[in-house]
Image 1: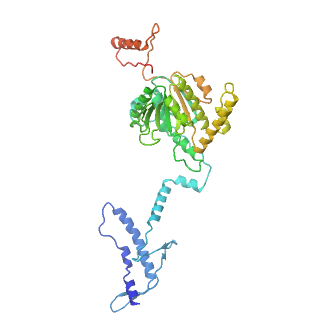
Image 2 (image 1 turned 180 degrees about the vertical axis):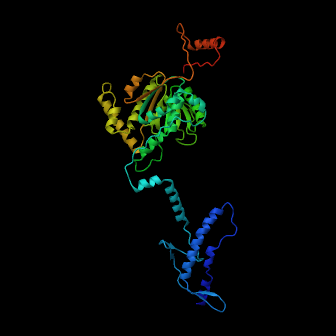
Length: 430
């Protein structure tokens, strides 16, 4: 009995409230907070531990003897049990504290999501925020604001958000090929549409669909030079936010899969990608630039993009079938049934993956608006007048057999007899 009393006499509850002597200046605020918690816990532990022991003091030597009463986990005023170890300190539950700390950070950071989870309501579509005509982001701000297309920045973004297809008629040198894709990307509308599409899914897909802009060009030189120019304007390296994809040259996704947000590609490269992915899952907008330069690949690409847009449209399946059904006068009934079945399968796949609607932008300097409006019913049109520099047109008296030779002679004449300035010569692609 005496041995047990001596063991409990060595149980010093006061060690709980001891403060460390050396405290660094950098960690001083943390130590103070920990010290305050330890003080409150230690004082409460000392009271509960003292109440659970019967203490007797002998008048002769002043020694304190603790009688061997049972030590159990005390209950805090809030109802939670406080366990004490052999030293009298409170048992730390680091894992639970870390989890609670993470949960508190998440709760504080997203108060709106907590309110939605408490009171489930039907999810409404987020309003598309169209950027105001303010300062641009990136480099070469002065040159970009002087372009004629800059004055129609907000109108272009609003049309792109409200319509699936927009037709842009702008003269050469207005900045449509470099600025419009950047406006759409910086507005963030593609991300909003993608989040709305996956909101109805039970489980979120691992891959992010419909957040990339693809700009097609009829020539590889145009795709490469435009991509480099937009890289300079947005202040990024080629292959990061902006990249190009032509035959035997691909600079996209330098930082990982689907990291390039604006891709300048030739018509043939996008058509080849559509063979393996007819829904164009990774793209949220396809910009068909220089639509007046029609070729076999361009015409086939228009049909492929229209079918992908019809399959990914956010309307009912009946409207999709009526919109994307081919002309019965030019197609046999057997082929029409096969096309309807193929489109129906594509629609089911797009719904299961949570693909957002595919936006299409057709741009050209001399665009036959009526033809494209018949091909894309319900499309919106915007015409951007003006050029950055005045252009004077001059024609030859007789047709020239060799275009390169005539262009060379004209450039030499302008250099020798003309006014000071620069000369821009458009050469054939082949």
